Length: 105
Image 1 (spheres, one colour):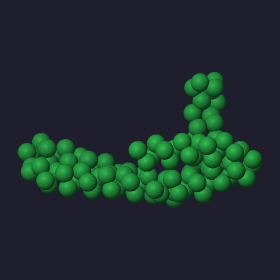
Image 2: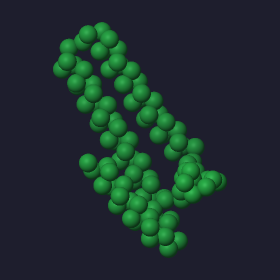
Image 3: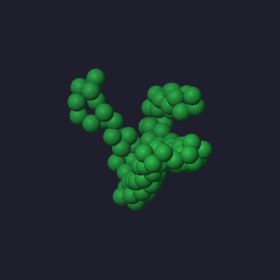
Image 4: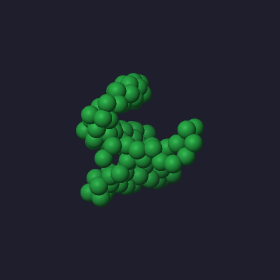
């Protein structure tokens, strides 16, 4: 299903997207793993672990976040963007281009 605006004034409108239970579960599982990795890094810092070991774990978290981003972006393009384009909303392409600029900093 495409992204939708919820009720509210134009300045406080927040977009929402209905996700199927399986998609939501998959995304939440990934986020829970990332959260656990971040807690592990915090514990390593608290335990005065060696810098290289901590940096290695930080790199693993960054890779996991990048993987999450790729999956979410692909789903966004396949659902929200493609449906908006089918409905004649060409602004979806502009929004996607702006998003890609932010992601590629």
